[in-house]
Image (cartoon, rainbow, N blue to C red; front, top):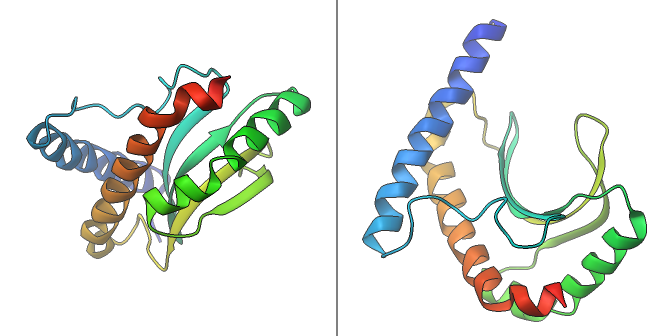
Length: 151
C-alpha cells in the first residue's frame, strides 16, 4: 500500500515523463511542445488526458454549470460524430451526463484504455503511446473543425 506522499510522487513522475515523451515527439512532427488542452478557443470545452488506477482516458470535456449550454455544445459535437470517430479510428463513448470523482457533472466524449494503472510503472510505456496517439488525432480533428463547433 502506498502512502499519500508516494502516490502523489508517482503521479507527478508519470506526468513529468509523459510531458517529456510527448514534447520530443511533437517537436519532431513540427508541432508546439505543449498540447491544446484548455486553449480551445471555446471556454467550456477542454481536451483532456486522465490516468487513474484502472484506466486511461483521452477525450473532450464540456464543463459549464449552464445545462442548456452544455447540451447545445454536446449537440454540436454530435453533428461531427462520424468525422470525429473516423479521425480517431474508433467509436468513442458519448456521455451527456458524466460525473467526475469530485461529484461535478460534465459532458464527456472519450476513448479509454482499461486494465492499466498509474501505480504500475510497467503500464506507463503502453499508456504513453495510448495518450499520445489519441490526443494527436483529437487535436487534428479539433484544429480542423473547431470553428464549426463554435458557431
